[in-house]
Image (cartoon, rainbow, N blue to C red):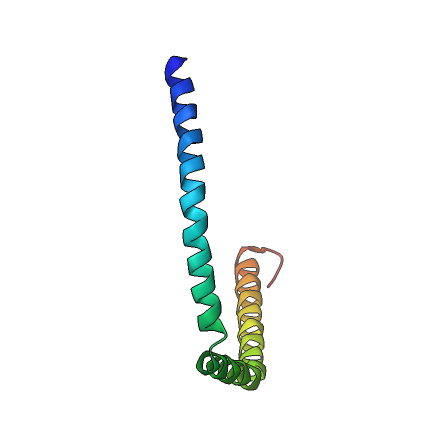
Length: 91
């Protein structure tokens, strides 16, 4: 029991000390990330990426739809093939 109490006390102390130092580090990282994100070069890249995705999305959607239809057709044929082999009523 004494070990558990010491463990919990250690965790609490570590949290308090870490939270103070951690908050400062977090703020530094956050500020740097904000500066990078709002950089005009980064925003140009973001705009290019958005335009590319908007252009290619319909093509990708069509390919995915075709692939799903092909898979559904193949699965249906497999089921028909498997049931016709095991169904004694079917000639």
